[in-house]
Length: 129
Image 1 (cartoon, rainbow, N blue to C red):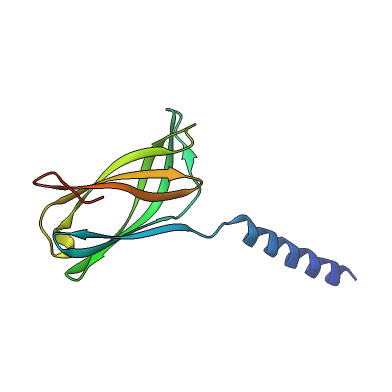
Image 2 (cartoon, rainbow, N blue to C red; image 1 turned 60 degrees about the vertical axis):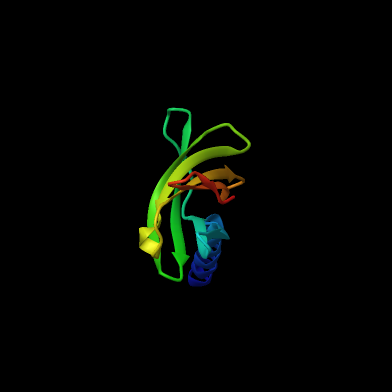
């Protein structure tokens, strides 16, 4: 009887723990940069946390790829807390994907998801999105 109760408790606890960890929230978009498709993806990899300075820190896995290569890295993005949609700028050096220049992204964070809102290529200040 005790073994059966203990087994039921363990099964319920395991199910609750699994449900408490949400699946990563990901976005992916392909932009045409210098005539080449560049796919940019962001996945929120953990819970956001406040840093005590009116910011929330969001851990993400970033992937960007093109026919000339791919770059993957983990980072933390700092957004303003208390906003329905919060924005941050991030610059991507395109040499890792076989292109020249820097892609300056405006990222927005809303409802637990990071996505590309705007993109500007330099040099030349070329609007991509």
